[in-house]
Length: 202
Image (cartoon, rainbow, N blue to C red):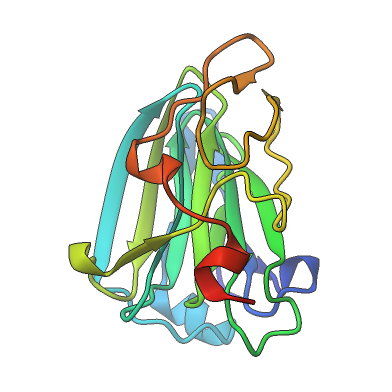
């Protein structure tokens, strides 16, 4: 299948994929194709990406869980520096895995890419001192279309690695920290999202 190997339907969640590129490595370093539409089509992944994004975050930063309500996005995510735990939550109401999540450790060294289809909430936690995160989207960002879910919603039950704390009944990061005592850092907005039942009534 060209220059990529695809693991389909992670944890039985239809459409969630892990993509690993062929690495050409020698004493000088390495080369890899990070994206080839031809290889994606051969793998049955017919996606037309329209926007690339990149962010940098420090240790303990948790971004999410985010989605767009009227303009959902497929995302192809990877890490170019550091380590993150990346999570997708199935929000497709007709899906047998509605409300189920899958998480992947993505690092600059493992060079894995996580394909998250439309209809999912997405978020990540930075586990290294710093992480740089890149992702492709098949829909443009619409700032007035943002939705979100509480990162610690017990009905989803995400097991964030290295995170200690007691659920306070809301999405506040207060009292949460990593095992090395690094405080968990969330935006003010991400600490106000509600759980999946309150958000969707299901």
